[in-house]
Image (cartoon, rainbow, N blue to C red; front, side):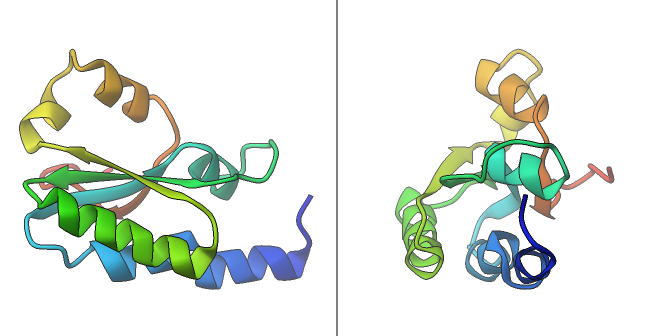
Length: 118
């Protein structure tokens, strides 16, 4: 169980802050969220400390830009950052298995998709 100082540092300077700095301004990005084990721990689900950070980016972006942003965050965090690029159409399709999987897990939104308030 992390100590109070670790929790405070994670909230103040954790991956969500760095991901916002690197991903939120990418041209063509409609939405950015952290999912997977880091999001689960951040939102209070018990489990082992995460070994990586999974980032979903919705939009029409350059794959190169997304991976370069992930690499910059990875260098600062010193843990792997795994980006997943999803088109807006794919995000709204109810039948896409990857989208269903991501939607069924805890999400820490950095930037919500247009029209999604909660």
